Image (spheres, rainbow, N blue to C red):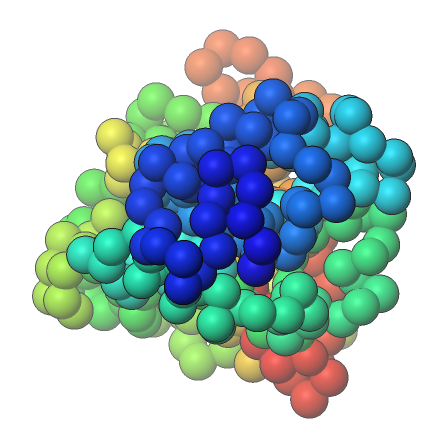
Length: 326
């Protein structure tokens, strides 16, 4: 790669964080030469933001920088939401694999791994990646899941030993939130029956911090959408994160895992019922490929007010067609 704008070529001298920061400043100021803003520099910009701000902060900074840069250049260089989110995910995964690496070594490994801008096609079909939907908002992969940094959280099937933690998490939402329309906490016997009903086709899962016996930080489930036989391959998802642990990506991890399980189990569609005031839940489902499917007005009554229900739906391919999605 060529030098310029404070970023030396490899082999000239070792790149350090100051070089990456200089690249970021030049892009943010729209001062970086358009002709030199290559795929490699796009990756290095993402690497700087991931190292400086963490994956979540990196995404916000990358969006703002690219929008500022693109405002000065032709529409063909327009900001692309899905590509930005996807590269941040891949770069964050690489950085998490080498947490102690020097900037030069980390950058060199990153560029070697993703030397081609076509690397995203391992996760997306060309039509999906270049669609209008993908430009407008993040669209989930349709070929293979994007990796996530190893944060010590594992998702596994729930067991009876997890029921007390599941109920503790759920009780908060029963008593204080419209995330569920339940108004009483299930008894231990009712929760055991709930788990027993979630057999192989309708798994219940837990997100666990540490090893498999660690703290349960969230849970999810796939449930039969309707008991009539014709609905056998339509499921409803539930996702709950322990209060105080939001904004760590746990809900996204749990829901993505449920989507993957639903595909591997041969289900046709996943349906979500979301209270009309739960904007964060709507955004989470939309980010993972769910689409609006309807609105039911004033169908729930909780905390002395009537509540709408938003219906969202994600159609699923067969496992043979697309593998497991994220």
